[in-house]
Image 1: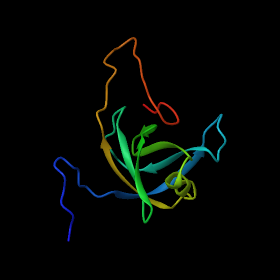
Image 2: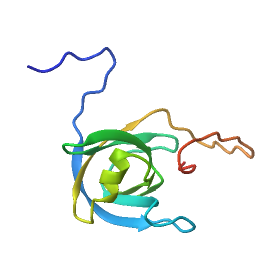
Image 3: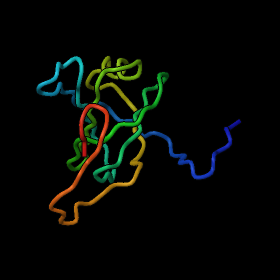
Length: 124
């Protein structure tokens, strides 16, 4: 029997896609910070995030750090059980992606701004 939905909860299922590239980031040990790339068409704006699902493991939110056409990237620091499992994935392995979520932003010609962030960098 399906579980009851909470009011306002998004219910779409993750779209499965293959990892097409996993790149260690310059200046960081490649075993500690990586950007994972997938080919999936999502209308992501700066400041939004995606949910990444590993079957039989869990689902976690990540900021989008790269987007060009259908190529999307998210940068991850290996810090816990989920990210350790993600780092064990290889090119060609399948993951699920949902989103985008959150409120994006536009620069609208702004000359100065202040960005406050957490995690392993400022993806937007």
